[in-house]
Image (cartoon, rainbow, N blue to C red; front, top):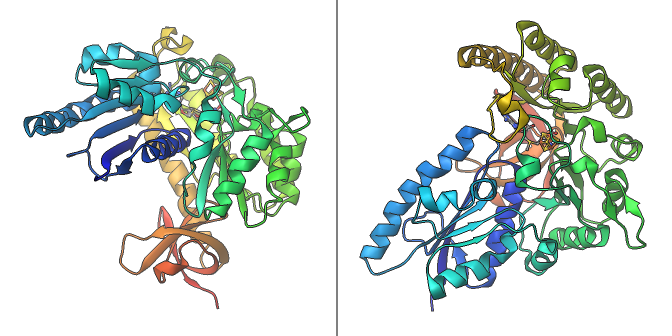
Length: 444
Ligand code: SAM
Ligand code: SF4
């Protein structure tokens, strides 16, 4: 019998990418195979993001298109189950069935281990099925089914958040902070390496707030966990994302300074360079504290590079506050950056603040800010020309005969080389630099 077809589409952060991988593993286990298109699929899963309004609205327009394919399949005597997973599912719940009644399943990020059961229920009984529970046994249920993610793999070690930044929906959609225990993480890392991973990125909404129990019941921080994982033979590179400045700690600084497997690149979200705005965002760190963290990491690893997340136009942001954010970016010198206009999210304190910044000002500031970050990125990319860098190649390039990978600093590097080098770490001399990637040749 031919296998049923699964189409999975992922929106949003790396945590969602990881969750999609795990949902795919689960469905493969019950007889589905992955499909590149939703046309003709038996099960379509949209793993959604609720962080900004635009991200959430995109889901509804995509659902409209998928419903046409569902109707077409129905008219040919087939059936397509549509599932909305992730943070839009968690935040909007039953509302999704009202706006898009052709959706069959809604499942939250804390309960997606039940996806095969929910799909089975729809097949048996039809009708709407929803699971938004915050279940504790999620990772236990997921543990058995790991498939290869290739040379570079994600591993979720922490979820949720207790920090309640005033702009953010995560504490509501992902729930309270939760850390997996160390032996469970170690076993998953060993499996990923056995399946071909040379690099693992440890994931969490606040990954450096990790506080998981070790074998003997002691609570470990992220720095300690990294040192433990670093002993795994065959694992060559370790990254972690996303961090909060308040959760940097001595063991983590030491891991950066002393462990060559820890990559010299960190995405450390600052959100704003203005102390006034940081306080109104409830970030609980100042710009000077942020500078001190950057300095300390650079003391330990002088070649350390940084990216960050920035919110432009948070309520009450004046020209002066915005200039502080520009100034912070100039002083740090980021090599990448993710900047977004503030998007008021219902239910968060920021949405009810009465000093919202007009849209046209947000647009102007965002443009100026992105120009600055782009200049910094291009300058860094150009400074790499003629340098030799080790690159982990993990996929084919866009052009025939090309393969692509990442260097230590998360820059994308492409070379002309045969596909069988995918999965290898190779020394490459950089010969060209574009705004978003580098070109190079293998050093013999
Ligand atoms: N935990 C990380 C931290 O503390 O910075 C960030 C994780 S958050 C899920 C990912 C990013 O989305 C944030 O860093 C922020 O820049 C952006 N973001 C969150 N809420 C937003 C909003 N309401 N409007 C615009 N961007 C937002
Ligand atoms: Fe959201 Fe990060 Fe703040 Fe938590 S710490 S509320 S995930 S921005």
